[in-house]
Length: 339
Image (cartoon, rainbow, N blue to C red):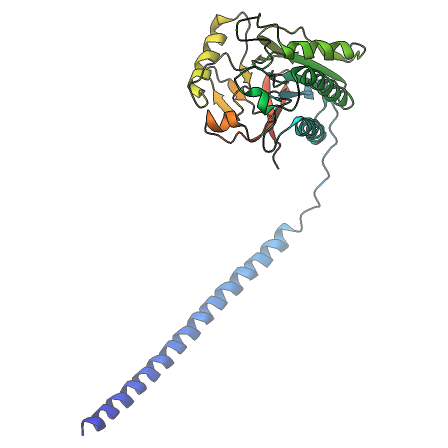
C-alpha cells in the first residue's frame, strides 16, 4: 500500500515539473522576443543615424614636418664599468668587447627611430671610469683577470677608439667627457695622486689616436668629476666611489651627496647626476627635481655584486636623449646585455 502511494506522489511530482518547464519555456520565449525587439530597434536607430551623418571622409595623410634646429635633440650615452680584463663565469675581455659593440649598434638603431620624429645630429659620450679591471685593487684579484694591466690598458684604448669612430659614422659631431674610476689606480690607495690612473692614461692614448677627427671634441679629463653641458641641460659625471657604502646600494647617501654637490659644494650647476661603480641600475629623484642615474657595468656574474651587495648585477649601459633648448631628458633607454 505504501509503495502505491509513493508511485502516485512521484507521478504528481513529474507532472508538476513538466508544468513548470512549460511555464519557463513560455517566459523564456517572451524574453527572447523582447530582446530581439530591442536589438532590432537599436540597429534601426544606428542605420538612421548613419544615413543622417553620412560616411566620413578618408583621413588625410600627416603633413611632412620640416626639420628645424629647434627640434634637434642630442643622444647622450653613459658608458661605465667595463672592468675589461675581468673573468667570471660569463665574462672575459672578449665578452666585454662584444658587449660594447652591441651597445654602440643599439644606440645607432635607437637613434634612427628617434630621427623619424626629429633631428639627432650630435652624440655626447660619458666615459665613467673603471674601464680597466686592474691587477692589485684587492687581494686575490690577479686570480680573477685574464690579462695584465698593461694589456688591459691597450685593449680598453682600442675599444674606446673603435666606439667613437663607429659613432662618428652615424652622428655629425661627437663630444666625449671622461672621469677615472677606482680600479684604474696605480699602486695601493693613496700611494699616487688620484689622477694617476689607468683610465686616464687610456683616455689620453685614445684622444691622441683620434686627434685628426675634426668632428670630435674630447673635453679635458683627469679630474674626479666632469660638468656635462648640452645647451640648457647640465649634468655632473662622477665614477661613484666618492659615495661610501657598507653593503648594498647607498641610495640615500647618493641623494644626500648629490644634493650637497648641487648646493655649492662644487663650483658648477647641474640638475642630473650620472654615476656607476655599484654595478646596478638605479634612478633616484632629487629635491631639485633632478635625478641620479646609476648605470650598471657590462660585467656579469660578478663576485663583488653577489658577495658585497647581495645582487646578481645585471649587465647594461644607458642611452638618453636630451632637448638642449628645453634642458630636459626626453627619452631614456637601458641597453641590457644579458639577453
